[in-house]
Structures are given as C-alpha cells and as structure tokens.
Length: 71
Image 1 (tube, rainbow, N blue to C red):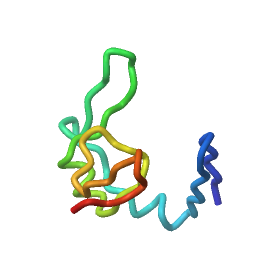
Image 2 (cartoon, rainbow, N blue to C red):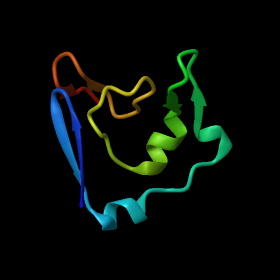
Image 3 (tube, helix red, strand yellow):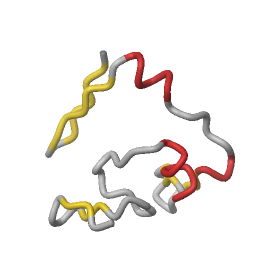
Image 4 (cartoon, rainbow, N blue to C red):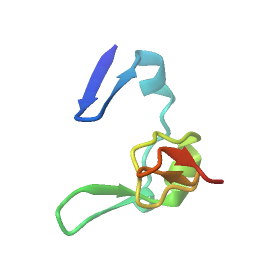
C-alpha cells in the first residue's frame, strides 16, 4: 500500500488500484508551463472515477472550493 499525503487530504493506494490504472497515451496529458502533467478529460474519463483533486479538466463536475460534484 502507498500513502500519498497532500496537505489537505491523504490518499491510500493499494497494489490492485495501481494495476487497474489505464496506460497513458500521448494525448492523455500535456505539460503545463510550470512542468506539471495535466490530464485531459479523455484520460480522466478513461480512468473512470473522480479523485477530488480539482483537476483542470475534470469531467465529473468536482468543485474543490465546495467539495461537491455538480454533474
């Protein structure tokens, strides 16, 4: 199990979840001007769930400010 700790929340990722993530295609992300990997809506839909991190292209309607899903 891997525990990823971000300042406001922690995500536990077990080995099964890691193996279930879809492989990245070149059009699944791009690099921001700061060098961060930004996932596209296509990839986030392919992944199949909302991670509630406030992704720039979240297709699930998650609002990080209100911690709600609007869609």
